Length: 202
Image (cartoon, rainbow, N blue to C red; front, side, top):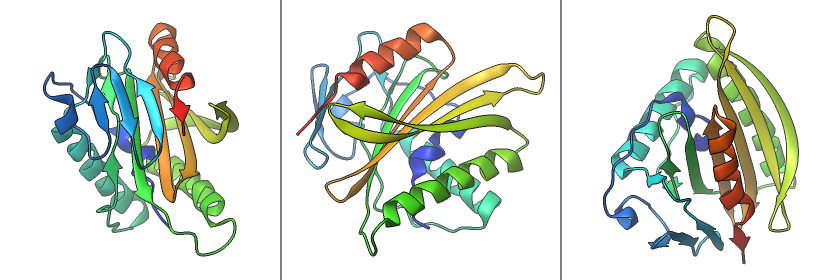
């Protein structure tokens, strides 16, 4: 199975750091408050008051995500092709993450099969750590492109909701492209959704 690390990044507590934003991404360019990826053909605004996540944090999340995969599924995965695209956050609960990874199609429907397998892997990863979640799936159109969306509601030991995750995914230009929105408050969710829904794809 080809692992999409974006599905596991939210397992880690994050920090942010104000520094040169273009040194915090693996592909694309940030000009003032606008990000553009040449490989994906994607342009998006960074909302006011949100900070680009430091590259060291993104790298740490990837490493922790790989460890979680190995512990829960016994898969030792090589993520050398993974690229951190635009990642920003308001605080450790309200986070926007995006990644890309080359995905070479070997048979018709492979990406769809892989995407379904990743949902199960994510569920099992949370379950193995004693974290209760509810999940559902849907599709959503962003700039006339259909994205598969995996919705997660995460609960604490007392049964109260502690986090929501909305994971968007699509195969674009030979890349497995993923966007992950983590939130608990409606205000911050709406701020992320506004700029995400206004994204432009070439």
